[in-house]
Image 1 (cartoon, rainbow, N blue to C red):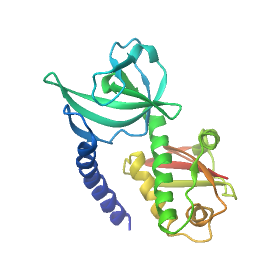
Image 2: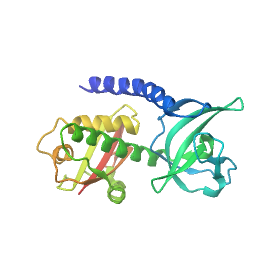
Image 3: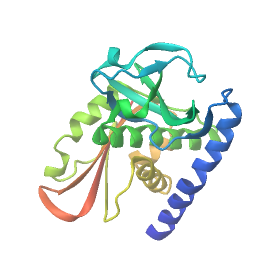
Length: 243
């Protein structure tokens, strides 16, 4: 079964970028963009201190909104990447967000990605997307991603690898996956969802089948520690809070 899951994930990761690229390029009204990718979407980072790059207002990359140094060391969320050719120079600009609002488009070299925070956020966002796709296809209302619940889940995740995994209850679910493979957040979300969709009468299954859940928060991390001891596996921990 693990081999089947891996094949599906690899196919998705191989096929999806090319589909996304071709579809998005046609929609973008900018002759300078030659490729659009999503490989770092939903990453968390900061703007590099005192960087003098422009933040552009739109995808023409002509209307300067502000300088990157105006956001020095501030936390941002990274969205779609745009590969552009401007004045015979190839660069990558990324959509950046604060407070869930688009700030503009900034050169990727002026962004420092926080890998740990990005992994957790990518698991969270993509798991909710997977759950809501399933729910819509089955006539159920989508659930809302709640950032305060995400913060609560992060707090419970802090030292989770030091102890026996807590029992699930009505509002909180704990998930552990151990593998020697090194998964990205998007891939792990597919593995987790595939397990949820095969279970019944569990708190996991309720996330995709119950109309009594309206919001959800998720946090995840990868650790070499399991119950206080190092092992030879990647131990993936996920905490899910639902209301």
